[in-house]
Length: 229
Image (cartoon, one colour):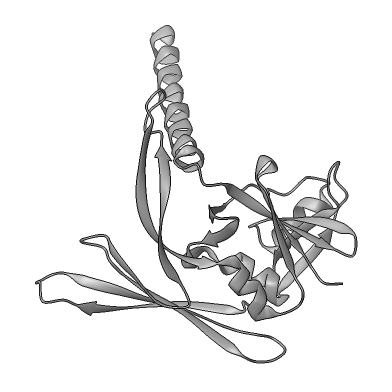
């Protein structure tokens, strides 16, 4: 009886681990576009971005534990220009506009961590409209942000029809097709072209106008942001 229970628990644990592996596999290997983390260079130091809150990072550091800081941004590249889908720009906008908190904690290869600051520089809102087809709706996305010093504002607007998958760039973004490679199962690879609504990262850096430079280090899965200090 104990042997059967042990085997049952072992089988269940194996299924759970396989499910976790499958999720991670699909998240990180579904495209050849780089998935990166942000590395902020400021005052000669390098800070790696953590999606944890500032309080959580400080708590980890107080226990002499390294906070979680994994690649999370999917970028697209064309002719050395970097693009990102607008619904994923929150962390980059916060770093560019200066809404971030630094946590000094010397690690082997960098100097500490950076987190979102207390007041987001941008606001993402969505409203729905109906179409001529009963039950079909279109999602209208608006990402609005303000320069903290000049008070100039900019809106990024696009819309999506979830029923058809149709997307349309409306303001300060564009529609571009990129080659995507998916690995649904180990040993199976599919490559195809897919269209996305994207934002040019150079456009964002120029808007904030602080002499900030970007550099992609794909082999280390890092997007370096060099602050103008």
